[in-house]
Length: 264
Image (cartoon, rainbow, N blue to C red; front, top):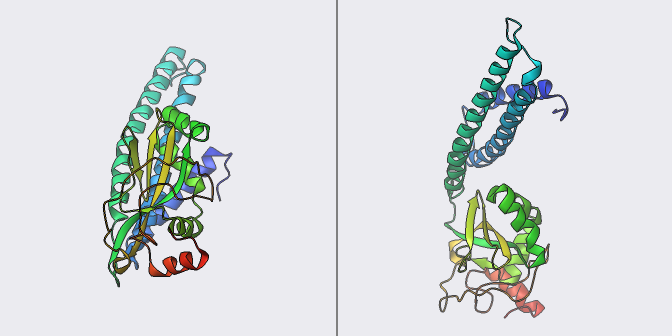
């Protein structure tokens, strides 16, 4: 178990864990298990990037208190600076590897390994924030990048509960809605759209449904920015024009909505 306080012990455990993964990943009994493995590696790569920066910072901070093998302080400072530079170079290469691994995860997430029933891709709304509710996430994106924004918004995702709420509210789309001026970023199963000028940010999650439940729309959907705010588990209906039950909605969900008087 990680100590979260002893870098030497945790580095040794990380080494052993990677050795174990290298051995275990020689054979995948279930090929679909590759997707979560890639996801864990992606998260681990982000942590590794942070470790590289922190190791470099230690070398820079203590460069004036060390010597080289000849007990020369000047030589020690040179070696510390060189080590910090190489660590920063390694971190840059990790960034490149991270982008490639992230792309691989996106493609892998679109694979249906054993399709008993043909599935189609839809995007469910996880959360939409605007105005003051969106400021914290937009500031985080500006300061730390889109990855940090997606990670922050993913905290609103309650799994099946979020999926059910999106189905009931018609917040399901054949593609993540993007409005004029929006930026868009995708990581794994998530797509985030954001607009600092308009003051809104939204997160969508990929969702696969049986092809027979994906009906053709009566007419093209008209995108619009919702007037009301929705946060947390409410995830109320926000975007897209849908017919009764939603053209992408399973019949069982439509029946529930009609019984509860929720249909549009």
